[in-house]
Length: 116
Image (tube, rainbow, N blue to C red; front, side, top):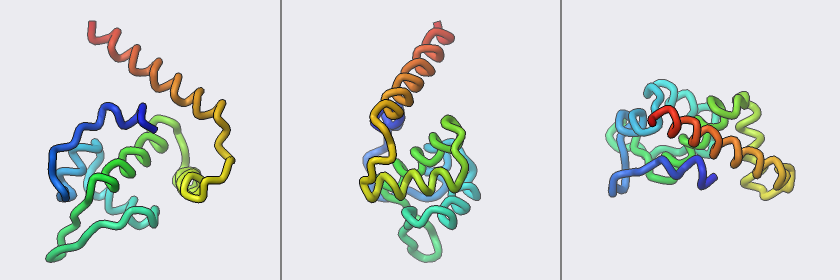
């Protein structure tokens, strides 16, 4: 997971508003609100009817986006993946993790090559 989070740099703040998180993650605010309903791991802090997110939640959003958009998981697949990771079950093989990491490195190298 460190590979997908390496490009995520967050300001030194405790909490972020939904608009800020939306810009950081690269999705619209309504997508974040939808993910709140689908993923019980996402628990915003509510103050005066405003959602506030901590850094852990932002990393979780980033992971969800990566699994949905880059790895082409379904919502149900991401839910299962998060449950499996939380329970520590060995359903995710090290070989699969290595393959995902290599794919991320390859994509990053391709994007760097295009920038040249």
